[in-house]
Image (tube, rainbow over all chains, first blue to last red; front, side, top):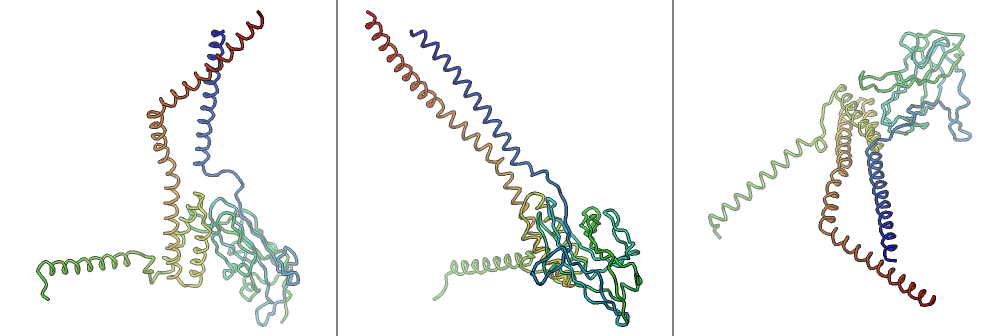
Length: 203
Length: 167
């Protein structure tokens, strides 16, 4: 009987060794995987910036993507129009901080703005008083708020640059990003505009 | 009461020590931009400092550091720059630059720290194995043998009872 016992004991010992080996291997694999995960920066996920244009509804006290102004009265004698108020929101969804500039430009209705082609100084009026610079951290959103309020008018400079147009104007917001290589802002391709904006000219 | 030459020497030494400390303090103040803000920064200098600070903030954010407070400060610097307040813009941006550098350095240390711990842990475990391993193994063997012996006794007793029963 003791021989039987010995056989059972050696069998048990072998099983024990096997279990210990499996546990050891799993532990080592776990340590390696967790170490790699700890020291690898997070990857994946889409990177983009968002730019939105909103208006403020005073009756509901909310910002909304609705009720955009479509026309404004321009006094030819004084050379100013009524004020136009818009709000933008800017979001950084890149996995690092970004330096943005939102640029307001006004162009004629037929001006072409695409993700590759921004408005140029030749075909648009650069409303530089309403260019907003902002550094945003990852997943930070700026606005809509009083800080991102844009209240401007069509003044004589705009009209003299673009001329009076029956087909209307485009009010363009472009998003530019700081480019470390160029050491300048470069067009991100993100843009938004109000189209067919009419000037009602009075004297 | 007249001072002895030794006392005089001591008081002179004390004055010298005070003077050295004062000089050291002045040197520290003059070399630390956080205490004495720079003045007379030009527009270009302020802009360059903002860009340099942004570069560091971006680097910090790439390493996964939370930079919200730094971006807020940097936006204050940009606002000051746009209001033609170049001194304030320069100083704020410079502070952001220094803070971002500190954060990056601390973050690197905290990333390296586990690597420093690894050899310490290995040495610790090796020491435990070398000094106590044999005792543990011996204790385990004795305990296991005792268990087997108990099993054998129980088995043999039951076998004997069975044989007596058969007879």
